[in-house]
Length: 163
Ligand code: MG
Image 1 (cartoon, rainbow, N blue to C red):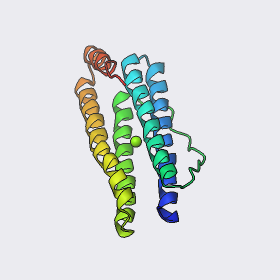
Image 2: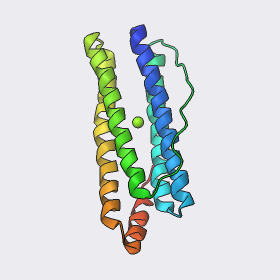
Image 3: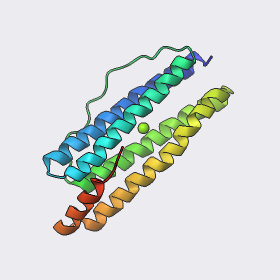
């Protein structure tokens, strides 16, 4: 069994993962509205991944006999100046998520909760991937800025991301 405090923290993280999903889909909506179908695809795949993260945490709570409790999801931003600004926000957001996960890990260490530490290891590794892939996209968009042809190609590249 995990502590009540730990269950509360993981529940908070489930909410944050759903917010992440909501934020990425809001970015997808804006990308689609601006005609960037490839970027919208990339962001929609990310939306699905974030929901999987939420359910991965939820499954862990259930396995530990703790109840999954949903809270209201904050409204996401709905419009960005351009794709580069959007992915800059995405990178900032992923850094926040990393800090939250590290915070839960710290609690698990303090509580000598080895099961939660083990479960969190997957998320620690995943956050390295998330920050890296968002940084790669941001770099491509920054390199393409000012060139319609390059932006078209960047959007095509983003359209190739699969689930
Ligand atoms: Mg996530």
